[in-house]
Amino acid sequence: MKRISLTQYLVEQQREHGRIPAQLRLLIEVVARACKRIAIAVNKGALGDVLGSAHSENVQGEIQKKLDVISNEVLIEANEWGGHLAAMASEEMDSIHVVPNRYPQGEYLLLFDPLDGSSNIDVNVSIGTIFSVLRKISHTPGVSEDDFLQPGKQQAAAGYCVYGPQTTLVLTLGNGVALFTLDRETGSWLLTQTDVQVPQDTKEFAINMSNMRHWDSPVRQYIDECLAGRDGPRGKDFNMRWVASMVADVHRILTRGGVFLYPWDQREPDKPGKLRLMYEANPMAFIVEQAGGAATNGRERILDIVPSKLHERVSVLLGSRNEVERVTAYHAAAAAEAGATEGRA
Ligand code: AHM
Ligand code: MG
Image: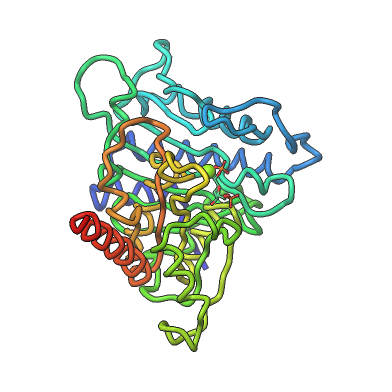
């Protein structure tokens, strides 16, 4: 069977459907090429001396792994000279990386989590790269962090790559979701699925259950009801999965449905959540919505949140639409109840 390549897919999107300008096409191709290089490094593992700690910390105070640092460098190097970007931002860099003066500046902004699921690197479990593309909308010269602070609904494209048993690239340009698989023999990304759809209903949830005692009541209620199974209010048994790589958990949900929750919890009450809005939650929310699913922070649609800083954190509930709506409604009911109690006091 003749399959079309990522390049051909993008050219068709540009030429026939007028969906993407040439600069955005180049950007996606460059990111995909960088992901291929990261996949090669991941694949070498101990043979490439890429496992273990880099003995450094990122801006979030997390210990960086060697592959976090390598993947970040690969993405920066691949993207800075092509003329398609104005600047980049990453989980692994404190502030934005402006394209150096010696290169032409493009109109796009690229954000990424270069290696998602860092705790799984050394144990040979699926990990990935997540990316989000925005357009620089201000016409002022130069680029600043403020240019990045746009709500996720303004993303021009988003995607992720999973380095697992297969290496897959999932992409949205805002008109549905396409899936590409890396053919290692030819080095090409080949289109293996179009119009990816997340089933509306599910019997599978993904959450780190070890944090249960720290959750807020709406999340507790939702999971309690799932755990009660057939005899509980949901009237059906649920299954649970937690890979602890968001890319792998989201990929499973795109493939067979499910709901993913990384909610706010009481361990660090001042932080809205663990995951980062701009390069984890936003691109995943865009992809999931484009596949017919939903994504909220418990109160509002993730893609509507206006960020106030680059490394902002957020609660994440995403996946099969009916489940996300249910758990979001539990949050609304709890907030209404709290409001009523306050009013009575
Ligand atoms: P990372 O970007 O540093 O790898 O952290 C994000 C990861 C997500 O991929 C995953 O859903 C979550 O952290 C797992 O967290 P925990 O180990 O608390 O279950
Ligand atoms: Mg991550």
